[in-house]
Length: 197
Image (cartoon, rainbow, N blue to C red; front, side):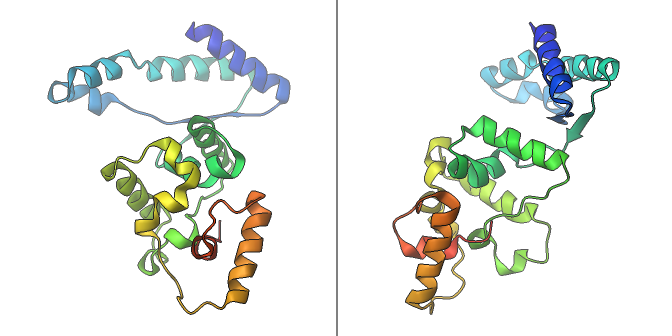
């Protein structure tokens, strides 16, 4: 089963003449501390064969002359759900894959301007993504809710300037209409805040 998947993946990459990017995942520390977790979690970690998949893929890529990029997995799911899932109508897995591919190409993903605190500007972009991820986890936010993430994350939105004129609000709204095709949120306050992808 896994061998067939690796063969299909590498054949597709060879036909399109493009490299493959995967997350550099390591569950060895988590597997070592499995006695502390629940039975379901332990079973899930034991059944993960990421190491075998990575070895098979690495071997096949070397034989076929296909580039394989291992990228840092930090916040790929969160970035994908906030930036790409609502914009392109993707599911959360495909949106995370888009983030992985962009990271392999050397792109950095900044959080939308409305979610960046002033003190975070001088820090690494992952500071903001970490805060967003913690908020999502602590508030039990479902992935499906993030298609309208501006409403879901309204408690952590950063209001830049409350004295915006109505003309700047209409400019912000028209810019979002151009980005999304239609405004993802009927309230102009959110349109104004969330420009700057």
